[in-house]
Image 1 (cartoon, rainbow, N blue to C red):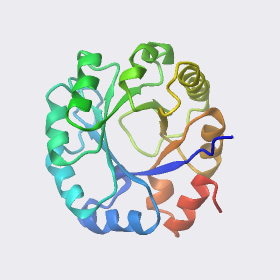
Image 2: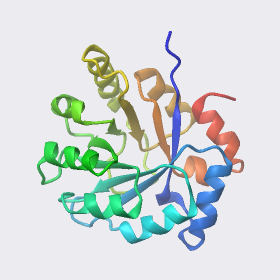
Image 3: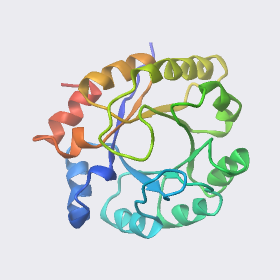
Length: 221
């Protein structure tokens, strides 16, 4: 049996941005695997967060992989900005107004890992034809745009369907990430469904003991 490596990604949405460098270092010390950098443009989603210049400062503060989740109306030009700023993984939404295949190819051309994200109302089957161009599929388990929302358990069949499709079509190395409402209980359900990358904000950053919380999410306690 192949041993699955579960990875955790700390969401910058939950960081104290006045102490950004220290927050990133705390994540590394706690054994968090990635930094998840949510980018919101006020158009694709209602909120506005931060852009490539802020990611550049995060890059200076850590050697951890940075996963840039572009919740933007058109990621076509943004891809290059975030690649130059130091993102290691760049996620675009299938619902964005762009040539999805071209954007995924461009991410790889820039030497970055490519990811495709889907919102809760999007059938996972719409992503299948793009998976050969992806290193990761991100299944949103909340509506994108706000942190601290409750986990949508009815998204888990999407995770299972995507994992089954990947395994049957020679894409066994595809990472499947879940983002939204992840805690110890929901992480266990997501892993059982087939996810191997867990994005957590409050559950990690606000935990009394981040290392213990991180280990609990991975199921290694």
